[in-house]
Image (cartoon, rainbow over all chains, first blue to last red; front, side):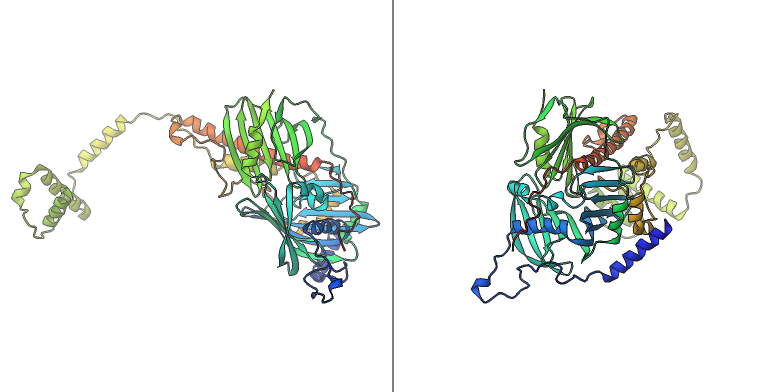
Length: 339
Length: 194
């Protein structure tokens, strides 16, 4: 065990020495501001559109070997993460781990994602992307996102010492937050992301602090190939596809239901009816549970961009959680009717 | 006007000349006489020249006041800070059932993260900007709660609600994680552009 640690630590140290050297010729150079404008009219390459940029992001996140660190900033709290991705023996390997506080990490081997958290049993899920600080939408189909957001190419700036292209995901209505992403012009990878509310205020951001793109995948990732991953999550108390005696009558356009079940909320053992909606970028959960408490108007708690709205009426407690504006959460909660 | 009067009395007391105020005038007006006396008393006390003469009276008054106080048998215990702290920490102190590869992967973290392990990862500390309601949504002014026990009860309810919100937030994140990806990018291999 000890020798493993030493090995890893030395590997990390050597990596950080090599770090910050973007490898030239790693990816085909992009048509970009880096190149002097061609004088010959025939050779003018079309500027990639915002959508193409995001497709490229998705490809880069799946195909490149990278080792990167980033910090998620919300309220006055910063959470540092390390994120590794690589291809080894034709298998896609990925690791995201929180570096401060109790351990929290996720690893992915092809289509198996395993989560390790300090306060619960590790479990695996069959999916092709890790759910964590980086929005899943960045590695999946951009078409879905495009239905609810306008993709706008804004301008270039310098992030993490690299030339970057800023792309804005602007909500087509006022029911959701906007996302700004800064992409590395050279590799197409993410360098910074921010969630902005309707008033243009910054709610949450992800700032990368280090990025190394390499020819080969990281040693740490290779170990994942030999690791025995935990079993698939199985909750015996969960009733999926349950018949619920209530319904949500309003959602912003573009939100589809991903999940409908009845389960117990851990630690407080509260039985809840649960619905999960997604618009390609943002997840919204609706919880309904019976309660004998007195009716209460909506109260909002917000951390970063995540809003938790809670109200009690007609003998039910309704909680709406997600990275949406409070008004949206409130409208969703208010639209619920009971049979 | 009485302020002005007091000023002149004070000045008179300090042997300054004051217009239209003599010892005879003072004798005429009870209120002014009282003030005059009081100022002398204050001066005496400050100079420590009171002697014994006010003590019996004062002591008697205190004795009477004490006798008149209702007897408090069991003072209400104030909700201690420990309650709150405990409530916040409880879900993060569970023992870690852990796993081998994560351990190796986390090698560098293990070295760096020996200190303060009790960091809440998603605290519900409301941001300054977004706080339309007090935390638990309990908006009653404190003055409504004339029964002391109900305040304690409220605090406990608040803690309970906070725990509940925390649990729901964590559950929300977990439910998202449990989703098998529904939106498989189908044209993943396709190069974006060239």
